[in-house]
Every structure is written in structure tokens, then in C-alpha cells.
Image 1 (cartoon, helix red, strand yellow):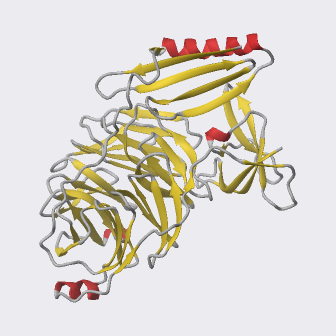
Image 2 (image 1 turned 45 degrees about the horizontal axis):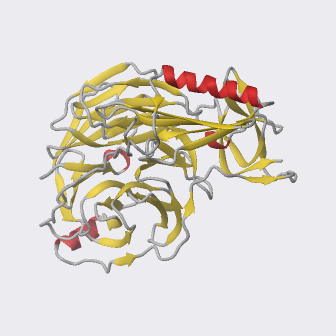
Image 3 (image 1 turned 60 degrees about the horizontal axis):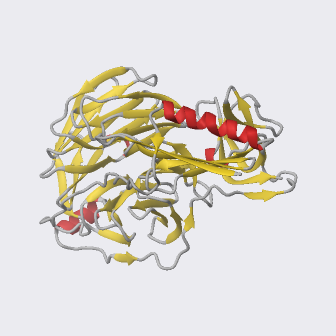
Length: 474
């Protein structure tokens, strides 16, 4: 006793392009959904008898039909290509920058984060590598699609991918932390205290909370939104018409025009920075959008960053050059990367880390002494690093099942149904059981209990976040 219903919703003009398949096999209902042409996500449920399983399936099918889905034949419609950031990268004529080491990731790289102990790089093949600050490769994750960007929120590291998912990279195995709608072509994302902001191809900004539930979305007056920065003040959104600040509730606080389309964004505590297609980096006050600085490059700016407090401003153009400016706008230097144009960058401890069009993660010595020597043609011996045969740890929804918990081994959480939604609460002693727990959606099972390595209070003091490994209790 089995039956399968396959539906699709495909809209013209870059809208929704997704499928929904419901299979009933005796008492089990299996739902598979996602973007057309992709494997999709799978969820199953078991019912008391076949009749109840059929009724549940019919209800799900009816909901989708009312939303515009229609019967289709699998494989007729093809996968719609998602956006890839394209730069016609030319060779810089400037002096070579003092590159200490360069890691070849194997494909054009967009995502970068540099923390206290490691640098992270993600590329178009879905590879995410971790390296020490001296360039030693320590890990490799495998995600199902191209990595758009990597962001951090306190101890937690996330990667946004072209499959519309945001993956938590904080444990040994990557897991989905946020599911962005299938019709959202992610351009960039940022996160603050569990609240995720996503900017997309259509110029929208979408905000979801720590439990992966939609909060609000705003269209932009422009399109191609390559900048989103989240902070206690709200969301700063950069698109083809400039930078717009939205409060935490989605109300527009201010808008500032830019010279050219915004292609990248950065933030410090009191200011935001926007690199543009007309070779500018604008500096705006978060409080009111007042421009407090402007930095002029010789070509379109595809990435920018600052030293702490904005004392120095860095920019990368599409001619494989990188710049450094003083806060007052004075250009201090311009040098060649030697490895393509910088899609993204981050400064830390007098080093500038770049991810580039040729797939490199490059570490530049940005100290005044090293830059001065490079301008005279004296360069350090560069170390070229390969990934080698390091194992790729794939993202998965599988969890190890254990039968008991040893004293002090970890913290137990439980999945419960509340108001039609599945929540997760801590059941171990010493925690507020009314608080929600940020927990991967794809491994939640109603009534199931899980053992997690550690549970920490969020910065806002209103929910918990897990850290480390997750095991299901039998």
C-alpha cells in the first residue's frame, strides 16, 4: 500500500522554483522538498494505521496546492542556476604585497572568517577549510553547495550556501541551523545573538530568529543586495541604491545614497562601511546615516574591512589590488595581491586575510615595516600551502544513538510540540526549562531527548545555544 504525489511550484522571473513530494508507504508518510533538481530535505512520520497516514498526506498536499503547487513529472523541469559572483579580474600593476602564506582551496572562494585560533575559508565546491594563523590546515568540511559567506556569532560559526541553507560549523559535523526559503537566492548573510539577516538577488532583506522562524522581510528600492550587517541597532542593508538601516522590528530608520552600487559591507561598533562599483568605500554613522568618511580606489570595490575602531580602512578591487587608507581618507598604500581579486577580507593583528577569485586564502603582512619593504621590492619568502589528503567531513542529519548518560557527560534537551511548532528545552537540572534552545531542525523528533556537549546562555539572556556534539538518547 504505497502512493506518491509529486508537486512543483515554478515562477517566472527568478521566483520560487521548488518541489514537494509526499510518499505514503503503509503507515509511514515521507515528505521530500527543496529546490527543483536538487536532492532536497527529507522528513518522515509514522501513524497508527494506513487510513490516518493517508489523511495526513492529503492534508499536506492540500496545503501546498492552495499555495500554487501543481502536479508535475519529476525531471522535466531542470535545476535553476543560482547566482555566482563574477569578477573580470585583471592583473594589478602595483608592487607585490608582502604575502606570508597562500592556501589554495581549489575553487573561487567567497567565505572567510578569522578568529582567535583559526582562519576559515569556503569555496564554490562547498569546501570549508580551517587553518591556523601560520597556514597549517587543520580541518575540512563538505557542504552540499557553494559557500557564499562565513560569519561568526560569539563562539558559533555559520556558512551560508547556494542551497538556501545556513550550516552550523561549530562541531565535528556540519548541521543545518537555518532554512532560508527555497526562492531566496542568498547573496550575503550576517548574524547577531542568534538573529540572522539575509540579503538576496532581488534586493530584499529577510530576518529570522534563533529558532529559525521568520520575523520580517523588506523589499529594497534597488536590487542585488550584497551587504547585510546585523547589530544591536538592527540591520544595515546595502544594495544597488545605497545603504538602508532597519530597526530590530523591521522599521526603516534611515537611508544613505552611495556613489555606485554597494558590492560589500563591513561594520564597527558605531559605523558601517560600504564598498561600491564606482571605486568608493563610504563610511556612515550607525546612529543617523551621516557620512563620516570616503575612500577612493582606482576600480570597483568588491571587498573591504577595517582595523579595530576603523583606524585603518582596507579595500580590494577587481584589478587584484588591495588598498589601505587612514581614517581621514588618506591613501597609505596600494599593492598587488598576486593571487587574483579579493572577494572578501578580514584584518587581525597587523595581518590582512583575503579570499580571492583564484580560490586562495592569502595572509598579508600589513605592518608598516613589511609594507614599506614591499614598496621597495623586498618581500618575505611566501609559503604555498596545499590541502593534501585531509578528510572531508560531510554535512548530515544523522545522529549517533546512545543508551545512557554518564554523570557530568553533558546536558540533556528534549523536543516538544508547542502550539503546532516543535520546540527544544533543557531538561537537565540547573537550567530554565521555559527557555527555547537553538537546535538543528533536521534532526528534531517529537518527544526525543538528546545529549549535547554544552549549553550556553545567549548574549540577550533569553534563550540557550548548544555547543559541541549532539547524540540522541535511546
